[in-house]
Image 1: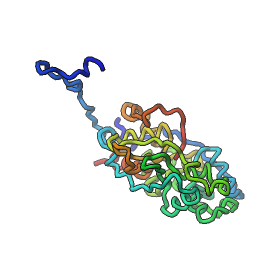
Image 2: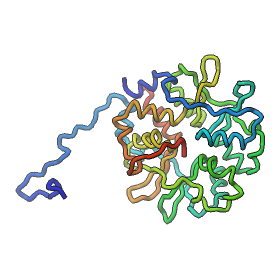
Image 3: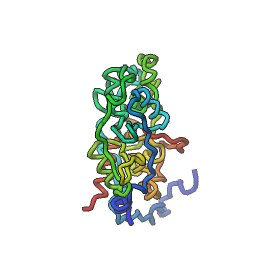
Image 4: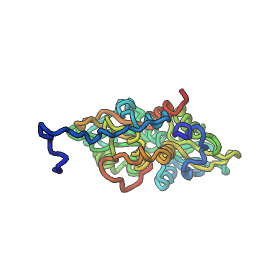
Length: 155
Length: 165
């Protein structure tokens, strides 16, 4: 099966999902930044009574912070994307691609059939999938002329 | 220099070392596109380039004003770094009073991994998958900055070439 066909048939559960950083709805933007820094990820899910109420992302942070640097002491709930793209574990991987394109985002929330948040996927997970499925061409590429010694989630 | 690098004399037949090379023949359209296209075909978005001496405060303002997630940083016309949403998150927002008047070079990602215009899209994916960079600068052969491959563009590329004809 070729790569394109695999993307169209393989389920989201085959992606290397990240643990979704979570913060409580009473937290501040500063708290969210610290959780995201610790996780090395560019988003966090804001939860209330174990239910997701919105996503806070580094893109939201950029726009709000540039307008007013004091925003870091605001309640994070003042700066949420109330609707966020999600896919189900048994959706196909091409639905992640579509969700990223339609929503112009790198972060896609993964939920199970009961709507529980089970992870995070997006650009890096997809690239890793392609690299694993097509290693002969992807993983032999020169990376900046020298071996990569570290991993970084985003830049 | 090895003997194989010695130019043939007039009575010697030139032997092309790639004479028997058969390029891969892909049935899968995405695999073919990843391997055979050039980064220049990805239409790397016009990118914003600022000087390494720009202050952190001005760089933050530029990012937000342009609604971009990354800026390329140059010194003497050469790429020396990137300033991205991740740098803002990791090194600026909680330290803003101390760093806002510093040059952006103090908080940027130095020496970013880049591709050449003639590299394949697979090279971009390798950088994104292995080293985790999500914005990949594109340089011409002479080192001039020509663009940046964004997450959006690589997503569009994957969708475009994985969809049925």
